[in-house]
Length: 275
Image (spheres, rainbow, N blue to C red):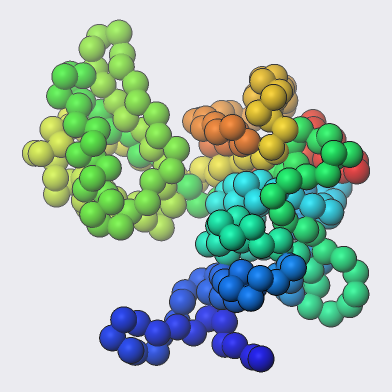
């Protein structure tokens, strides 16, 4: 059976495409529906690496990852799999294998749980350039309409990522968030159009930023990982602009010119080149 993975059909019966990642998502959906033992995604790489081997010295192919780890890596810039396909695999507990299209070498298995032998706390380093930080300022914290900011951006399909809210000692309020630089003009247009409703005083933006992240399910039970990450970046004089955390990842925004250096520093710090 051969299926054109990226093709779909609308509710009106029109032939369309499923968009980026459509082929991977279709493959996983079919594997789940057929109760397959696994779904092999055959691509131009031989598996998922600890980081992008084109830029990071010592990047090593991983034998396996959990669904959650792969989801985080996919969302954070690793382009091997689209997040939608991983989400589908997780929901239906369908094991995935990312492998080379040609050859017989085993790739990287993505599944529910890791083998007991694997004790690495951090499993991978992901990075993404083309990030901009927007900061919205209010003269009084009482005037802050944070929900209105994100409601209006969402209405206009502007996706935001890391969010930080602050109050100064003088009672001023500010809200910072990151987005892709390609969405900057749309975001500024929305905020300017709704300035009276949001009630802010001014807006600032900083471009040429990047996001660098560490990912690993073992971070849940190792609270010192974040401190180790920040100490390493500080030691190498890499400015930290913003921070975001979850149970299995820590992301930091750094100057774009420092992105690869920061990723290499973290890859070396957590000794990801070692099996």
